[in-house]
Image 1 (cartoon, rainbow, N blue to C red):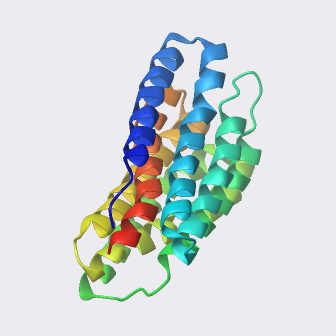
Image 2 (cartoon, helix red, strand yellow):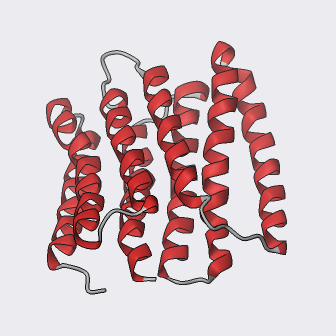
Image 3 (cartoon, helix red, strand yellow):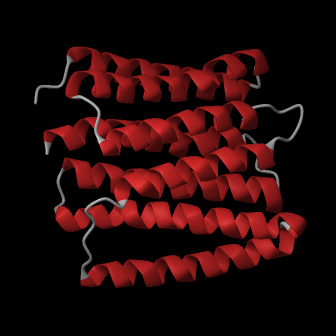
Length: 223
């Protein structure tokens, strides 16, 4: 299927808004940060919505669309610096990860290397959660639950490569890795120590991840 030109235009707008958002966040211009931050995820929503209009509704794209809507709410809550809405944001991010997992679990297959991936995840998360246990306090149990959910999502995304290292498989696998990286930065900043300009570093990985997930809804219709 031919990809409509306006999908590329939406992607270009996404990248431009993301770059502007990173600049104003680095400079600490809160009013502009509050304006541009939700606009990034909103553009990802429009990319998937455009895909639904062009290619028709399918199970995968609908779950991705639902996940991005949940992420839009979470991003809006977490961007506020005057008060901490971390708990509220985590709820919507968990919901979003569950929607992604529901999208990726369809028609999955398993290969031998998937067991190696699982072992790597267990080792990395053992180290991560030991770090969190020292600093998260009463939030440790919710953090464990969140980590389990995002790991399921990421694992299911990466093993999509079992069907071949095509554009769709590579896109969702890379998006999962980027998402993990952004969440690690977010967790360290929230529970371990304050990272100067942490929101800039978090979004440096998070925004490309969401863009790739949005585009996966386009690419799956071209398989």
